[in-house]
Amino acid sequence: MNKNIAVLASGRGSNLEAIIKNIEIGKCIANLVLVVSDNPDARALKIARDHNIKALYLDPGPKKTWLLPEYEENYVRVLKEHNVNLVCLAGFMRIIKQPLLNAFPNRILNIHPSLLPAFPGLDVQRKALEYGVKYSGCTVHFVDDTVDGGPIIAQAVVPILDNDTPETLAERILKEEHRIYTEAINLILSGQYQIVGRRVIRVGS
Image 1 (cartoon, rainbow, N blue to C red):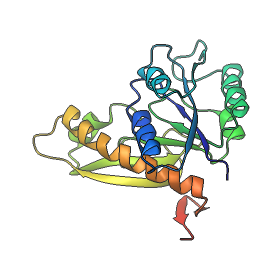
Image 2 (image 1 turned 90 degrees about the horizontal axis):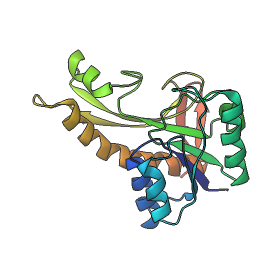
Image 3 (image 1 turned 180 degrees about the vertical axis):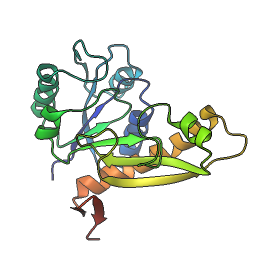
Image 4 (image 1 turned 45 degrees about the vertical axis):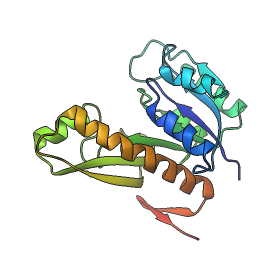
């Protein structure tokens, strides 16, 4: 099976860095062929280049939170040119729409710093603390035409401490993000899963 993946990132590239590390030490079976950003100053691009991975800035167009179809089609073209089989969003601050969804059906993953379906969107840790939940965590899910709403592949639970701030909670959750994103990538690339309704079921060995 084609194990080529691309990472789309807008910022510091923490999850990208973890994926690269796990590939280098043999924990991740992916072949990371491309990193793409909508932000020319994203640290993620520097991380990729420092590891001799092709890194591209692609113009996102005039919209702040999504890509107009002609711009998104350019993303599709570049990903296809690099024979990408799986697209991994890692802090990519754009809503994915039909051009990418149609080109990569059930082949786009995202990681979100909450236990979805709780607290989708932005400013997640503040929302969790204000609501008073006792546990938070992170979720890897397939991307569909809803915001943070696709079928869930993997989750990790992080207890909330009485003295937590949004920053301290986010820091602990990030460690789990680094772990489960690689696990989810390995599962999808292995093909040892089925999607039944909204459930992602592991099959095989």
